[in-house]
Length: 173
Image 1 (cartoon, one colour):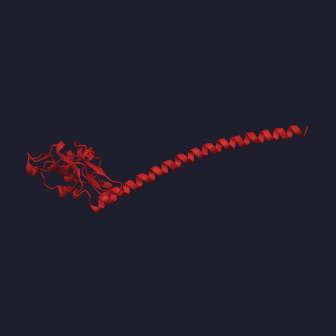
Image 2 (spheres, rainbow, N blue to C red):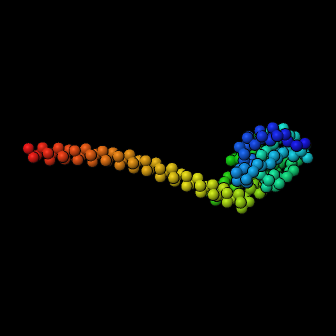
Image 3 (cartoon, rainbow, N blue to C red):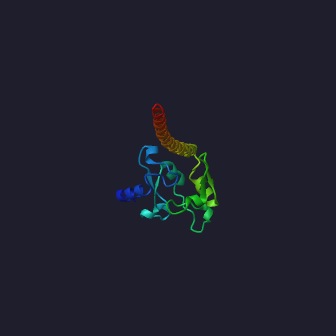
């Protein structure tokens, strides 16, 4: 059964227009993403909103109809977007690579190919952009501080000039 337009819209908003697995946005891919059934329909999953994930084509394909057996170990289970604490299982390096902190995190990265060159480059560029924004913010703060100091010094110069003029004017009498 196809996911309703209403359910699709709800899922799209819930995920902020980003892939629930790798984080790419609609703007990055130039269009809307797909709806993935976290627990696949083929394995008894449903169209319930809680089972739907907004996913890019690549992640949706890599995940496919993967559904671990009911008694499968934790290390063979994917992280569930919006439920599992991604940061407890996966860490991102400043160079954009993902590293599993747990066996489940490693499995998630490998199954969804989350260290694809394009994703690593995207994450690295986001780190660079964030560093540049931080530097720009620090530069603007420093500029504002220097402007305030300059204004204070200009005021002091004006006051000193007036004092010197008064002294020089007073000595001529």
